Length: 329
Image (spheres, rainbow, N blue to C red):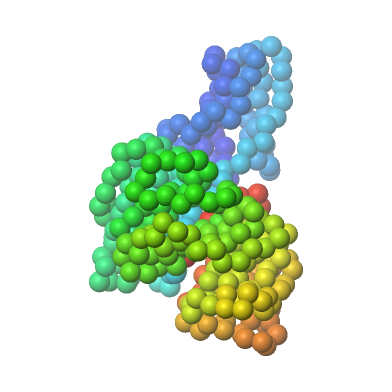
């Protein structure tokens, strides 16, 4: 038995079942890290790396590498992220107020939309609301419990719906079957029950989905899988980052490419000015206005939202490079 993690917030236990199992600091079982051929007698964390050394009854001594994937969501000035596997922290990015929800279960997915927060646990989905008439309210109260285990790649919450993104068919209220696995999805908002989403797929195709319509609307296609995308506030320009980290800005009216930039990590349009685009690169943030050259500023994290003059970057927790970020803006 050994405590691991940067703040020793996780516990690993090995024994007669030949498995090394990971637990949260509250005793919530997360799952097995490895299974050996004999009893595990001892384990210890590497002092500097995310590795665990273990010793078995048959004389085997080896190390395994572990990683805790990032689970988080951003909508305008509200950012929610998973902490210590079983907690959800919601942060107001303008006031820096924080609220913590202790779920006492493994938090699998998080989605934020306006005053609504959805949390997917191992066997249920919890939906929380804060005060609708107070833009600064951070008191979240549970409104709905969906007692079902949903298997999905992405989770989106809207005013009256939960949207699940799956690679297999399922019987739901409404279903959109696409020709390729979904790699990225962004919430556009809209009237209740008629909100819109834009979806980027592994094939490079992008589509717009409206919740009250069964027909996805094709937008543009890029050469490889989509990593990130956003639609301008006038809904006439689409910015896409593909798997080669190339940013391309497309006019949805003429279908021409307006701008292209290599080595981009994330992108977000200004929600007030249709001509202002922000995108991040290697340790820098770029702001482009219309046809003017981009203005560059050194930063340490990814730009994922912008309202007026305020850029938002989810740097509350370290991001692993292999983790696909699925922000819901």
